[in-house]
Length: 226
Image 1: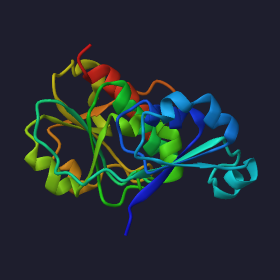
Image 2: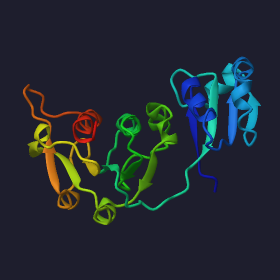
Image 3: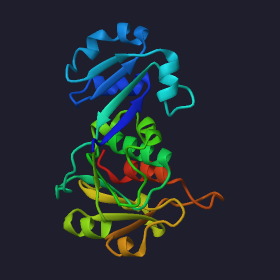
Image 4: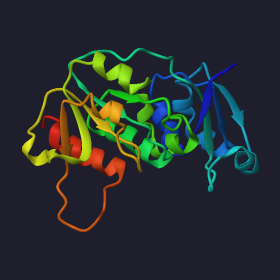
């Protein structure tokens, strides 16, 4: 069985086309193809198909189809490496928009390793790919039970939780694992028990909680070296 996924939209497609990542198929309108022949030529391995707007509408998973669609191979499965760097560890993230944004956050902060528990939303879901805006290219994404993967990592482990200590007092760290929990249930007890630090973003207003991806972005800005 071929494990493939789709990336749609000119901005996302151009991210892949400017990279050295393999591409299986490029489906584009004649107009888009003509305007981007120079970058399409970087990928002689890709089959190229010219399609009408109606064809792309029929193929698209988006509400507003674009002029180009790529068929891409899944990245080869890898073991989570134990390195002196930062990781994001995601415990059962379910929302595709959150997952895509979390991949972009990892990319923004230069975090090269993102570990997803098996019950996370598929990182190649079309909505995830769209939200990540090409960041799949630069972030290594692993799927593994966090209860198995985290003990093998020597970096300190920071659990994002409402009951944690003030992250503004935590300082910055050269390496670490930032654990972000499920949107409604938070971090599971088994994974929480593996954390070496519990941190929270102090609340001064009335909101009950922060979105998982928003929390991750704030915590990365405060914990990672600047």
